[in-house]
Image (cartoon, rainbow, N blue to C red; front, side, top):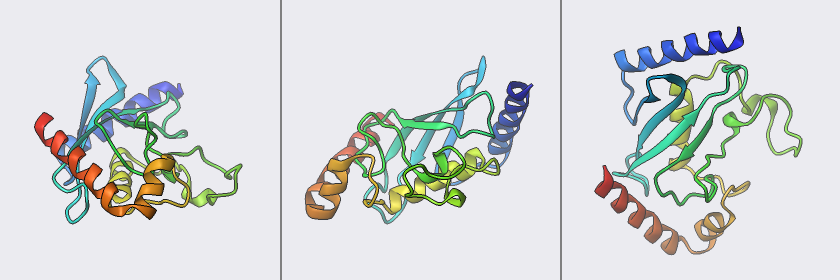
Length: 167
C-alpha cells in the first residue's frame, strides 16, 4: 500500500514539474518503467563557483516515500564539502527523520514528508551556493575550501568546464 501511495505521489510531482518547470534544474525518469529513479540536471547557480555548470545526478526514492527521504548521487564529477567522493549528497533534509544520533542536527532540520522533489533540488542548489565545512562529507574538499581557497576554486572551474563539454 505504501509503495502505491509513493508511486502516485511521485507521478504527481513529476507531472507538476513538467507543467511548471523550476529555474535551476530539470528532472525526469531514468526509465519509464519505474517512478522511483529520476535523472536530474542541476544548473550551477549564478554568482557561485559552480555557475554555468550542468551537473547530473540520480535521485532514488524508497518505496515508503514521503515517509523516508530519497538519496541523491551526482553522476557528474563534483568537488564540494557536502558531496561524498562517490557523488552522494549529504544535506540535513536527506537524513532520516527524528533526532540525530550524533547530535549535529536538530530533528527539524532533517527529513520531513512535506519535502518534495522541488524542495530537495532547491536545497541542493543552495548547498552549492553555500558549502557547510563544519560537518563535511568530503573532508579533503572541506579542508581545501577552508585552507586553500584558490586551489578549491581552480578544481571547481575545471569541473564546470568539463560539465559544459558533456551538456
